[in-house]
Length: 604
Ligand code: ADP
Ligand code: ZN
Image (cartoon, rainbow, N blue to C red; front, side, top):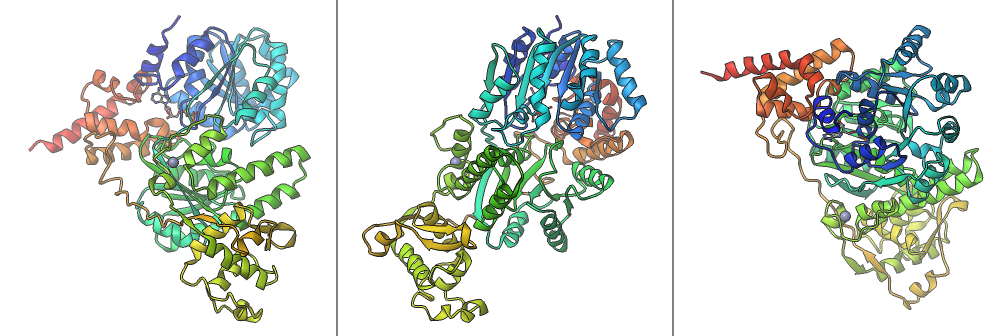
């Protein structure tokens, strides 16, 4: 049997396994089923790719998206691995080529979509080959308890009828406790072992903020991130475009990305982003599934996401290179109501709708929470943890709790005096004594509470009112245009029979991260930035020639190692992280000559 460490080193160019990779690979090679829950960027792919290279037969990988399959196949081929994908976008001759490769035993990994795999014809054909492992990627799609249920996935359970002795490895980055159990049941995993890695991404600092004036807040944030790559997720196509336009007007390199763009335009934008020609992508969630850009420094959610699974997967696209990154989320009641309306109006099954509503509520609790955010997420995924994380806004600047009774009374009394006819923003305008036409037209400037809260700024008020709603002291009436109403608990507060604790609003300032070129330190490596730039130029050219994204040639991390160690021999090259035998033999000559030329310019 081939040695798995040898494959890790010579094919992938890595020196050691990460987390539970080695255990998972051994378990799989012993012929067992397993469920692997590992966060995005954790290194799930190697868990089945290495067994695929040890085994002499075929490993079939099920993946829901063509873009995802193509990226994986491209990356594997760069490593010299025999891999291919079968999907509906292939011409019949391309299709035939793949079939022949399988039949002649010339393929290690075959990527297929679930609907292709489960067609009877295909299963019959597959039985005549030497399948020795099924890898089910994005396995949460099999469960209605998950956040991305796909009916095609349900059929995958039948694989066990046709291939009784072939082990299955199911992998996902997003599955709460219920979903994990359901995956095991639906895929009929036998005597499986569950490998749950910690979901904590220690290099990502999370911030959540009320959404008022979010564009200005984004400008302030991006100001501290000059020339760095980031994604801004928006709820609608229209807002991706308007946000991108505003950023462009500020002279920033930003583009909108959504499913309404022509396919060639989409792949062009994606390519420019991968190659660092565009810094910021304003996207709907259509963007990012197939993205393995390691140096994304921040992810912003312009609107509240639908659920914690999606949110966590999206922020997981930041900092794949292990370096410091940030996630910034904006939330408002408006966002929440919009999302609730999407759920209510959808034609999906009632149970599914209920599950989605509960997930949305949990998302809201997360965003408006004053406790450690990381722990909220970890607890959600069943990884119970109490010690505060130290890398979320609430840990870094813990909000103080104050006696907020007076604030609560001001708000409640304004609700009474406006006869429960106003929503959150108008209420705050009244409390702050705004002279907007809308306020005057309704005569709200004549109510007794007009202006009583003018000492307190808008964002702070918004933060307090959210807490009052969360505490059940105010009701946000969805059936009446989101107007604010009293609740059975309000009276005790109005009569001063009950105190109301509120957490203070902390105005977090964003810390400036220096431009990447000034500081490309990788764990305190001493990087020659001029050489790094030369290597990047070479990589961009080569990527264009080969029509692949730049990172599949060599990723930034590897370039940094090269620009620090400056290897001058073929064997020194092999000791660089990310360079295995295939990459050494393909790129070795070119790399050594760039380094040599560069060293010459340094000698006087
Ligand atoms: P996931 O599928 O879990 O999101 P990937 O399998 O795409 O993650 O891996 C994320 C990144 O980490 C990839 O660039 C991959 O090459 C790298 N990686 C995976 N395992 C290792 C390892 N043992 N050592 C170094 N890098 C690794
Ligand atoms: Zn925390």
